[in-house]
Image: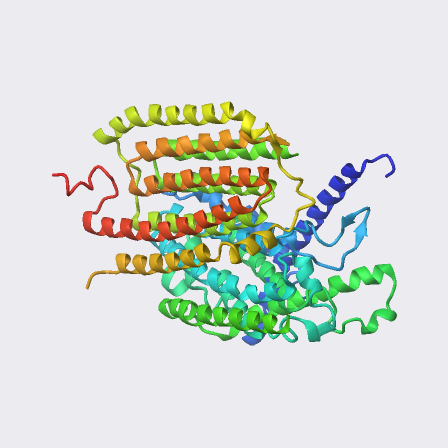
Length: 353
Length: 168
Length: 100
């Protein structure tokens, strides 16, 4: 290691970090699918996948192999370049945004932070930006497949995502006001003073913002109860009707990767990120460097999985909205509520300061 | 580093712009403009304007261009056909644009002295807190223009609703 | 480190391409898109100068340009939709009711 320059070391560690995070994220995506199938099955009094491997644990691998081996069909009337580009955009954008998420406490090895790929000054805006680029994947897929169901699904989805992006962005302003920064690390640190009591959702009184964020995030990821773009009883399968094999799998993975990203953001902004809910009470007991690095990551993963479970629970519980209900809910209820939340939060902060 | 970023993303922006010019279908033009905007966002970031870079991605490519693509899809706009007007436009447009480019670059190059041949570009790692600076300016000195733009946006929303509404 | 002139010339290129596209294109939406390209080119010069003089005023200006562009896009696209509704075409050569 001694003959490497600092820059080379940085490059090597960064590439390694990116590779590891990518592999873990893809695995997490695969197993979220399994988790969803298992949980939904239990909610509906079924077993769910249980044949492949113990408790069906190898099911995601088999599913992946299956979608690789299926025939990849291209409709004749499809617009070839965009038809291929669309799933790439969707999956790419879903995977990129994890780059700014801090998974754990600051742990430096040779000056490189192990648990965050890039500590960007405007981390929150980066995530919002990448999410807004992800819309193109859905939009283009619907247009390029040259199919009216796809087109309707993607038009719906575009309108829905743009509308709910406003509420989503505004709901985060309260958190940013409290942390006075857009850096995700700083936002997490601003909530780590007294464990769960200083998390934004409890101590920060951002519970309204969290509610808005949750609703908007469901709509943003096209999940039930807002899964209008792929409502199967109206639109066959929505924007990915014409897609088969690996291209379909990419859309599928993009949806779950988006769910994971959204859960990560919720964890970071409202639930204290990688900090423990007990604050610093138990710090004296486990004070070895390795444990200090590992515990925060475990907390982070646990919180993210709690969110994913919530997603699945909601899907198993709530019926789908009608389209006009969806729009009026977003514009007439969530948006004014988000603005009111900003005003109240800034007043309180101004009073205190 | 700075130069490499400039060359890569400048070339990308230029390629996107040329593609915009050459493509016949509006949706391809719109997507090439998205490429231009994204590469400009990177250039902004390399110039220390990180807030603008984010705003460029979120507002321009994430909202405005999506709206364009949405309308193109909604109206099902096809490839444009050549007409008499378009031939005249070719005859005027390309020389005109070339002339304007020559004029602009002549001015820029001849004013090199005023530019002090200054080299710009901060390093990306030690970013200053650009957002704080911008917002302080925006909410103190430029408060009136800021409020006026918000009224402008409100008027634009109302106008769009009135225009796009179906006639009773 | 890049000379300021490079940024300016890149912006000039983008701007002229925008003008060419504005003149050549016959589709209203594409014409509108090339206006956005020109606005972007000008924004680049603003940011470059803002960085050169170490002031944020240029960035504030770009911010305002973005806001105005958003408003313009909303109204403009609404106009295009209503044109399409009455004329069933997007070709500027055919939208000439006032002329003949």
